[in-house]
Length: 330
Image (cartoon, rainbow, N blue to C red; front, side, top):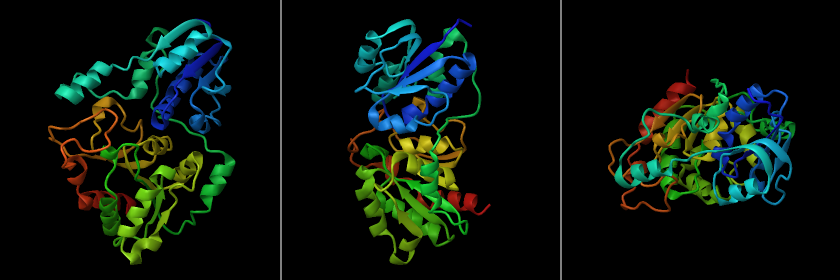
C-alpha cells in the first residue's frame, strides 16, 4: 500500500449520496489508519458528517480546502468539484465515473446494461481500485450528537412501537401521494396502536398537512407531524430510535439505513439498477413491475410524463400495510 498521509474526499450533494460515502471513509481509514481524512461538501450537509470520527476537517464551497493532499477522491465529478481539485496541490487524484450513458440508455431506451445489482457504495470504491481497498458488510454510518439524541428521546416512552414515515422527496414522481399514505396509515392504525412520526424538511410540510387532513379524526392523535420542525440530524436521531421506517426513495431512507432500520420502501419512477437501494440494511421494496414507461428519469420528474402516475398510484395500500403489520407484530 502506498504511503498516504492526507486524503480529501469531495461529495457536494445530496443527503443520500453523502451518506453512501461513509463506508468508503471507513475503508480509507482501514487502509491508512494514521492518515488525515478531510471532506468537502455543501454547507447544508455538513451536519451529516460533523460527528464522524474518521474525519479531521470538513470544508464547504464557501470555505474550500487549501491544503496539500496525497490523495484526492472526487466523488462528485462535476464542474464545481473540478474547480476545487484544480486549486489544490495533490499527488494522486481519482474521479468517480458516473456512467451517465448507462442511465441515459435505461431511461430513454429501456436498455439495462448495469448487469447484476451493485450499490453506489461499491461503485464509489471502484474509483479507488488501484489501491485495493477492503470492503465490509457494515453499511453506512451516521453519528447524531448527544443533543440530537436527547431531543429525540422525548418522543419515545416505550409503551408502543414507532413507525417513522419519510413521505417526501424532491421530485413528484418519487412521492407516494399524501392521500394514499393516509389510506395506508388508516389501515395500519386500525389494527395496531403504533405511534407514527411524519419526518421531512420545511419543503415537505404541505404534504405532511395533506396526510393529516386526509386521516380520520379518530386516528390523528396517533400521528405526530414533525415535518419542518426538526433539524436534519434531529430527524436522524428520531429514525435511530424508531422501530421501522416507511419511506419513498429519498435521503432520509439512506439515513435510516445507517442505523440498520427495517425499511418499507416505495419506488415510483426510481429503478434499483441505479444503485441506490439501502446499503446492508433490511428492506421490503414495493414497486409496480412491468411498466414500460419506468424509469422515466434517473433523478425523478416534477410530473408524470404519461399523466397516469401508475408507478405510484398502482401500489397497494393494503399489501404495504399488511407487510408493516406483520413486522411490527413479531
